[in-house]
Amino acid sequence: MKSINRHIKVVIPARYGSTRLPGKPLIDLCGEPMVVRVANRVSQALPFADLWVATDDPRIKDVVMANGYQALLTCADHESGTDRIAELVEKLCWPDDEIVINIQGDEPLIDIDLLSRFSVFCINHPSLSMASVMVPITSSVDINDSNVVKVTTNKNSQATMFSRSPLPFCRDVPLNEWPLESFNRHVGIYAYKAGVLRELSKAPPCQSERLEKLEQLRALWLGITISMFKWNQKLHAGVDSFSDVHRVRDILNNKLDW
Image (cartoon, rainbow, N blue to C red):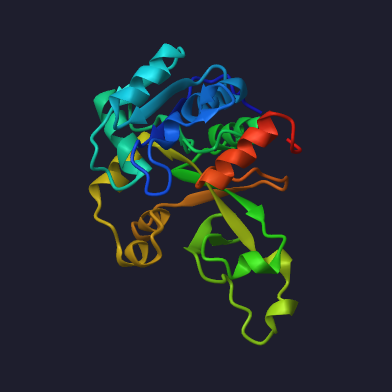
């Protein structure tokens, strides 16, 4: 097994604007802004990675740099975090074969062991183009939840489809009897070769991406292979609402299980 100490790139996209939580990256979580807590978790998991925050707002950039991390100001009109990261890749002139890991800026409780193992998975993958993470679905409620993105894979653990709808669809079986072991949830952690990022950012959104509002479908449409890393342990949900903010604060204050 190759060491995770190899010099890899990690980028946290952090957009100031949010419909439900304006200024989300700067929300205080028990004394630290959320984006800084995410960076701290990444730094613990991958201490030798070249870590950057790509943001559209100078206030976020200033806070990140004041806490000892690297940050780059990017355009405000990007439609996705992938496009924001692609701009950073271009500005910093990273070579096409560089591995770039994308960690969402609203995951202050992201699992350190998961990040470590995922990076090893990417480094050890000889033909990596793009990679992501999936976890088993453990509740039938999640199968029909449009906020839970489902993913199917082929025999080589490469993604074949992502959807907000039930996937796969068990045609001849009542919903309450659908086999949960057949379903996997997609987790929005990505890795790409820098050259793939460039290709993705230059391509227009495809029809399935526009319909499902899932940017990873553009990669499949372009014929880019997405290798899926399966994680079988529990994950903490990210921060999308004020109730999530209170939940994370309670966890950090040891009021809930970590």
